[in-house]
Length: 196
Image (tube, rainbow, N blue to C red; front, side, top):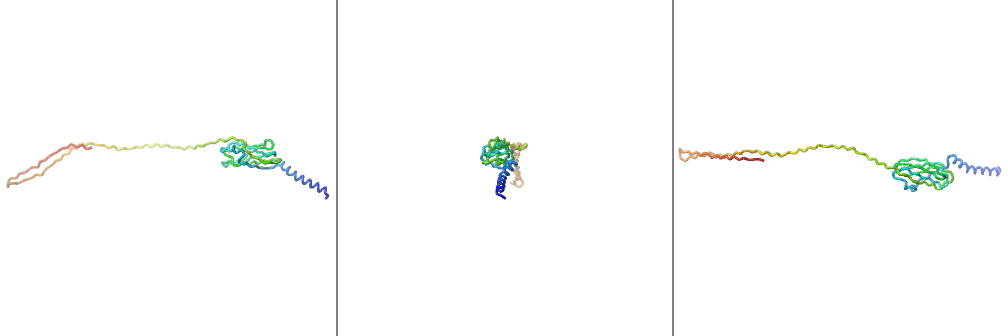
């Protein structure tokens, strides 16, 4: 082969090596890239109760063609949100969650030269916190308490007490044939006694 043909084939191969990736990239929608949120940019807008967050993706001179945002939340849920292109080099996302964002990553396609892409929470609206209070069923039982008090009853009984004192009969003999009998004296005393 001659040098001229070899040179032409070499140039064609070099041009093909340059053009083929460009043509393939253009046909697939651009070059894929990702950028993670650093947890700092716009962190003041990352609310504990979640809410709607507006995210900005800037890619430093490249043209963003399409993309989406993947977000993980503190309550264990995750979701993806489609982006919208705004001018050259910027894409916006709006995410919504019920708790604070713990991780976010933008997946996007671009064309041109990508320089230091940055993902930031631009601003947001806090979510509403719903407090659920459980009511306890309360049953009130009324007990009737009966207290029986024994009354002390004092009964006054008038009783008549009779005391009888009887002395024994004494027989004394002094003379034969003479007997003296002394009859005992009986005394009866009656008292009225009250008990109580």
